[in-house]
Image (cartoon, rainbow, N blue to C red):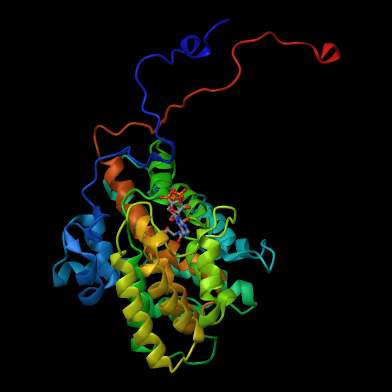
Length: 401
Ligand code: ACO
């Protein structure tokens, strides 16, 4: 019997780390997380300060360039982004190939992937200038692509970008405006939305960012790499959790039903999990969830929305934080727990939640992709495996099996 591991050169020391729980895949200067303390820093700046005092455009610049911009640099960056918000007109026809009831994340995967067939002048990844143009294009076009995915799903005509508005104001108008009617951007909603984008902008080597890096490590087209990130983000254990969290809160419905769901989450024979709870890295309160809860208060008050699911969310959090099971396993609300409540109050259907996450995370993806490509020691990502299959055997013709 031949030991097939030796046959294929699998000798020597390997780390076996399913899910990469303790394997660093790269060096990075972009985002720092201390999961035990509940700390999140972008380029050294605490997420709470960025969410309170900064804007999404400023955070996008910070992630990409490493420093906060001067006033002039911010104006130039914002202007550059606003010059790239249009989609090639031919891309509008691409949407019409999707079924009306296609999930908008399916549309996002397809349309962002299709950008790779449109912008050939920004795909030489060895050229830093072209990399930056591709990054600007991606950041700028995501709101347009996302709003068009929404419009397509409800059968309304697409709206062209209005570049006199802010990044976030323009997105809200393209999403909720209708042709021939003025859409006035509500500053409270615009600020809340911008803050949600900041909170989702980057989170170091999460599954979708690692996917973008792995895809990009082969030198692949940047637009295709971001489409790969979108595909990964879609899963309910990752970006899809905000949709799942809101669906769960609606299913619970009233505060008196919470104990039943807590009991289910603790039952090992029941696959149910409290969505929006727990995190691979945070073993403390996710700092983004705190800002999100505050933003939820502001938005619901401004809109005069008295949604019982917000009471369910708050009460569920209180009960879980005192429950031995959640305390012992260090399960706290994550960023997705309250975001759905806000997005739903603003008027987004649940199917759009992960799309908004993808829109914001694009800044982190392109920053991480740029960092990787500009590293002179960058190698193609190629994990190893621990082979557990059959040892070598001889082929048997089908008639003799
Ligand atoms: N409800 C109930 N139990 C949970 C939950 C939960 N939400 N999350 C984890 N646990 C339990 C697990 O059953 C496991 O128990 P065990 O030790 O008895 O087997 C233990 O806590 C550890 O959980 P793992 O799944 O091993 O932890 P991991 O780090 O792999 O998973 C994850 C993290 C996927 C986020 C998980 O907590 C989860 O599924 N949460 C719900 C989905 C969610 O909210 N995802 C969003 C993540 S944030 C983001 O992507 C932006």
